[in-house]
Image (tube, rainbow, N blue to C red; front, side, top):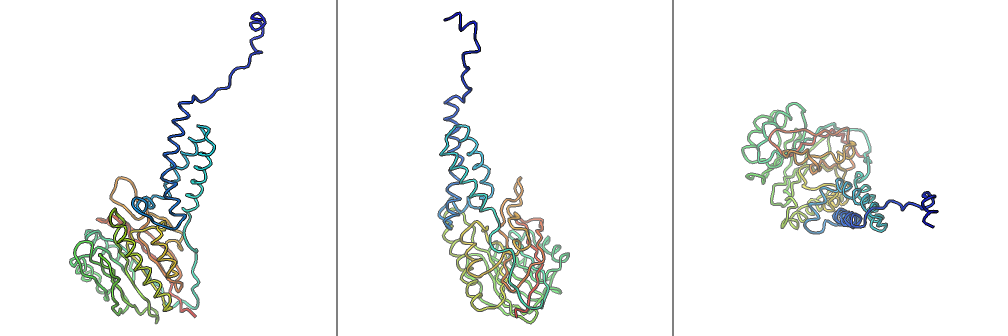
Length: 339
């Protein structure tokens, strides 16, 4: 028998190469750990909730969670864990689906165009980027400028430098991050600000013969132990948007929302007021605006210009302002007659 085996070595099948079991266990554990965060975050997105810390913070990274979900799927396949691999693929597909732009890609504006305008929304970071904003406004010539974190010195600088082209303003006075101002080329009627820790001024502007409701949005950021306040303040923005929609006139809400399309509290503002993100309509959804001052480039869009169905969007650009950790949002809009 031994002679026969020696004479015919090819008759003995070689064992199939396998991944050693300890390696498969390590790969399976790694896959489970990698898919855990995308599972929780994508699950909350699916359930339309911002939940509790750390979910609201992690939702800002939702598009980037496709990377660990994909790695988890590969490791699970390597480990031959079919159930884990299927789960990882499902989470990957859901995460990828939620990276698509939120909401319709056009408005239902009717009637002739009564005014063409540019709107600039900027966070000047405690007034540090005021001079850069003056330069941008002189260069781009917007008719409306929404400025967050604009202290009294910032307001004085802006009104002194831009008063000829933007003579009207609505202000919430405050130091540091609490001050804000809307500068306008159109006559304004003051309206009560939206209650918040940081200034959210409001006004009604007469634009192209139409009364347009303006509000600057700047809710608290969703940092730990502040998520509830962030949700309440965005809820007040949604309440205003809903009331303005029921009133039936044009609405423009812009500013640093401290929220992206992946946050339920921000989507509620869009849905309650039937508003549209101008960047989305311009084909620039998810263009990151924050943070600018890290070694890595910005990763999330939290600065927005929201418009009612009375507007059409001709374009959107994002401007770097020296001294600010935010990129400014510049949109070109057409206001329609609505009939």
